[in-house]
Length: 167
Ligand SMILES: [Zn+2]
Image 1 (tube, protein in one colour):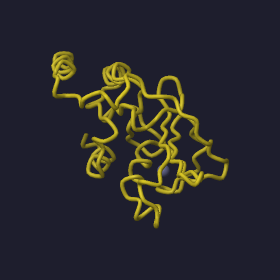
Image 2 (cartoon, helix red, strand yellow):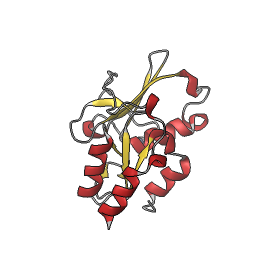
Image 3 (spheres, helix red, strand yellow):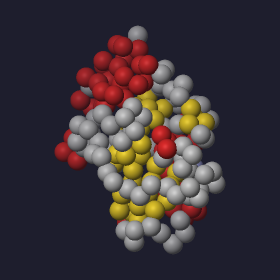
């Protein structure tokens, strides 16, 4: 049943945005690493302890914010007025997430995110970043995920639902 659903979903031309802006594989990006003292602006946890979960927002002025998972990165980017007062989204140079399988740092806007899976991050339920849709589909199968989302599909409402296990 799940396989049928996946097939229908993957085969549906309406399921995907026109792919001009979206490469088949999220690009690797180079971003600063969190320092031992870097804390997540959203939850306050030390980030460097969780290298496989690190997400990073790099501002055009060269400063960076590090997160202990994609979920808190989404919360931050979606509520800059709370977590980065005086900043606007136009000031963001790069957003990076850590790819689940190979741990490369990839462009967050090009990544695929599996939600509803049995893999928990330091802050519980997570958006699991994958570089390709095929990898995301494999992860979803192997880890009982419920959906694959792209960056722009993630709203604050979605973050809440994922956090509370409603997705
Ligand atoms: Zn956090």
